[in-house]
Length: 366
Ligand code: DAH
Image 1 (cartoon, rainbow, N blue to C red):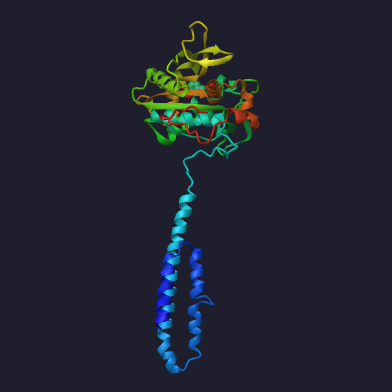
Image 2: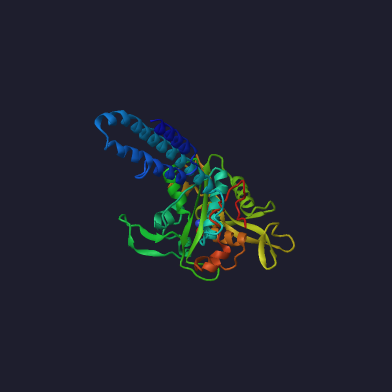
């Protein structure tokens, strides 16, 4: 009896002291295992007379219960500690860049679109979208280019053989300007949107590809004038090229959808065979380069978008995304943009982790 009590106390002490699951298992085998002393004691009950058994059983059964309970509690504690230790050892720092992992990269066009969205968002512009398969009303007519307008012929348009159910021609949009019309109809005024996307023209040489990218911009409000347009473009280009010495020249031009219309040129110089934006285009060693078109929205376009031109004024602009990407990141052949050559993408692509932000810089870091 005393023997069982003292052996039980010793077993409970050993269980409490066990520092590993292995040590605990050894203790379990020694007590409750098939050949453990508790099991052997239990077996002796079978050979006893009923009186002896009644006297001996409570002590041995209580020893088994106490030891079993202690083993279970200690096992749970050791397992919890092991898990804690494993969690501490195997932490993954999700803020670390996956240096060794990725082979893919972000295409410069996608990167520049993200930069555009980031900069214009700060100026209060939302991103609008429209279909690449357009009808000729949105692509031309609503933009003040009716069927006989000569500017239509200047867009080398890809037409589909089919027509819409109401008889309009279907085409691949030749510019992002139809999104102006769709955004006005959908959202009304006042409105500030940019619309980056793919456009298509049947044209192909070193500086033209049948598919290329534009970003449209549109602001409609009361009292909008050319000064707002110039400030907006200047502010955008300074943020985009990440330099303060950007000089723009607005050159009188003609677009059916704007009146007056201007072409936007930026001053640049040649440095080491590379065009570098910055400085006045008329300064020594400098020249002007065209970046896009813009102007005050033609009242007929506002009306096509369902707005009263007596109440609302707007400006709009359209820039070539591929062209400004080439200027910023130093590529010289547009066609390579769309070859899908992994070596080119490796060289000019961006890490998916380099999200453009205004605080950290919109342009790529190494
Ligand atoms: N849509 C014109 C083009 O593709 C570019 C353009 C010019 C867009 C003037 C505009 C604008 O919004 O106001 O050549």
